[in-house]
Length: 337
Image (cartoon, rainbow, N blue to C red; front, side, top):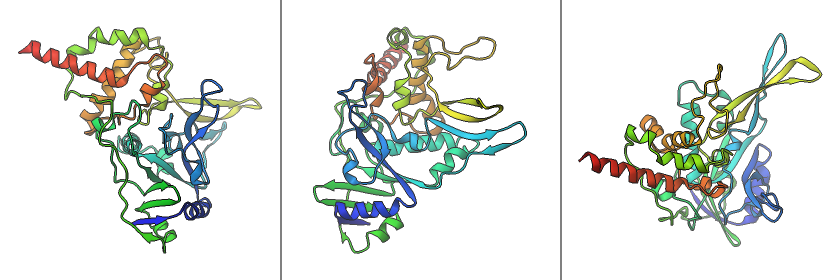
């Protein structure tokens, strides 16, 4: 149901909801970037609408709310194991349409891909999602090409326009809190075009897996993994067992983000590694995002947020890579005729 209200009313509702939920949204961290004169826009806890950065794209996605960068799964001693406690509060997350589609990709990986990941599920089950509209496309976004510029699968949509706040609620708790607000027809803002456009081939022939094309990226990529960490659909992790210094027989197991681009990611016992070459790692990521995932689950994994292009220190463009690969596929098809 749609409502028209005020920032003061929404902030009062936030204050009440904060008893049971932590509210996360993209916010500006002044001087937190690579250099002291560069700000970072990333997710943090907020208590007021004015703290939310609506006008710019966040450098990092929402995923660390559901998949913490470092998460203790359980504690152990010589004799017993104790699972980490479930957070006392739920979460409310402000995010854009593309990221909502990214949430579906994470759900598929952790909830619908064989055994359910209980650590992800316990956070996911107590999280609500509030959509932020996009009035204009941001640099490097290609959500329209990926079909992720719109989403109806939200608990609420909130738009702040001066002293007016428009709300489209799909959440009964919010409906109750907004009882008495002016009813209004609210349609979420979304873009219809991006400056960046990608074309994805339906299939990629096996012959292109060893194409020299990938070597170009092997020469440019420095294996920093930043593209993976800003991506809302990258879900790989590694495990770390931490032994306490005051008792070497007790400790905890942590799940920590990992990157398929970083050296050592595919190392195995015996010294074998699946992808030593950085070009091979780029091929793996690209094929996973726009080919393999769709063949298995029916949608592309990439949601077109363009954060990987924003953050790459070597100016490698994932969008350009997709288009170049499509050109190679077309050229290969012509040669077969």
